[in-house]
Image (cartoon, rainbow, N blue to C red; front, side, top):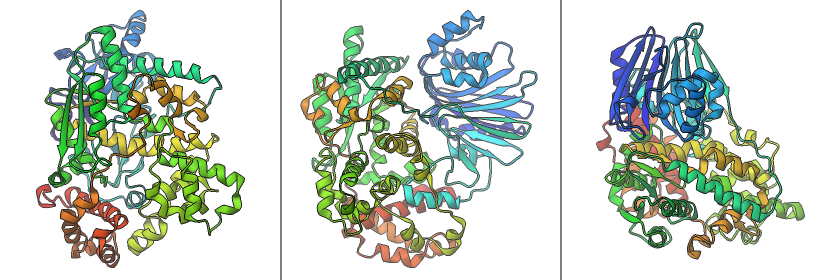
Length: 634
């Protein structure tokens, strides 16, 4: 992993150094710069493969007319190198970086279809007739890549804070703010900064002659193929094991984040099988929890799995004092994400760095195998609606909601019962049902009371969910597609990358490997969700390898004791920041609405969630727009 920076349209060595230095946490092992006429590239390197100076970046081809700054891992780089050598390409290092250069030379933008990995890179192509900058991001969006284009110059970086170091004007994107209130994160390509964009997953960008062209090179293609359960069990086992084997390649210490759920436990099972075959080192596992009740704390499940596979297990307990680091975490994230469960990942990564530099995680398992509550609940509600449509009128009751929820016993449904009166009438429109169930905080009516008139005029009502539901695929794949295209890259993977790289750790995601994605695209949906069992074929495949407590365990999101933390500490901070004259001067929110929201909020989880959402934005605003010191905010 690395941090990349650069710009085209002018030369300024002082600016490229400032941009690169601000993200030195992404690459403490080495740094480098490249300058050409009107071009600057920067790199901070975290050495993972080929630790020698031969891996120094930016790196060039033999002729010095194609240069790259790169962040990521290409897992099939050895196979590609062998093919390229047969075509006459010469190599000076053992890095995957050099493989990308020569693959681009050979195939141009089509090279992206050959890479199996996680990556974001920039290639300056100075060859005759080219003179262009080529930016690319991996299929699923594991590696971040941001850019800013003002019709003259193009800036890019792994993190937004690097682009801000260039000196551009800091303003809030009003549409992004409106979207944030709905989604609790900012769906791409927007960011909360006006003018700064995310390069979308599966896309590339070409800058040439002061013009920018965006192209999609990959997208999901769900085409289920019918076959026996046994066939898919064998294929899943082989695909997952092969994927994990590839992602264990590293020249530095490697470990695994173990949550105690089926996803991370299955990765560990594969790591253990591979270790027995190869005689590798003892596996290091890392878990985090709270000193609270068992519903919130997953440590006992993680211990169970760690003991089964005899790992070198490490645990970290997070207390409510950690909330004071939330401003620092937001600085690492670049954008407001109101999730206090980010703190355990941040602190666990800090502890992990003492033992490992590469980490495998279970991210993506719920998305590809339909493991979330919304997948089960909307699917079974839709089945009910087909049989009894009149029951789903405006007078639909909580009893009907509970009857449907019994068909999805692995889900934590009861908490959502109070939304039944909104959710049930929405079932006939799956996109609306998804919004009602998943995005519980601010709907359009609520936003109209929260936002000032000026902001409401500027922000349009988005149709992001509705557009994705237009895809001609079955309902379960539509539901998982929304998670794969939105929540996964713009929230979960963003959190994963920024908070591990904050401590110079590379995280890898086996479930999002090219071959795993291809497997689940062909997997019949009745094997993802069957007879009330989420991740049906996955659980069946892993039943022989994991403790039954893990296989049968109900799905719980990793949740912090938010209500307790809010009552003991955050409520005072919220009142101080949200009920202040500065709110009026900022011009985003109605102060009267905020005052009403703060009243008696300690006893309302619904209010607390909304307050945390707004408080997170306010802290972010003070750090990034106003330039306040982080240690004075909480």
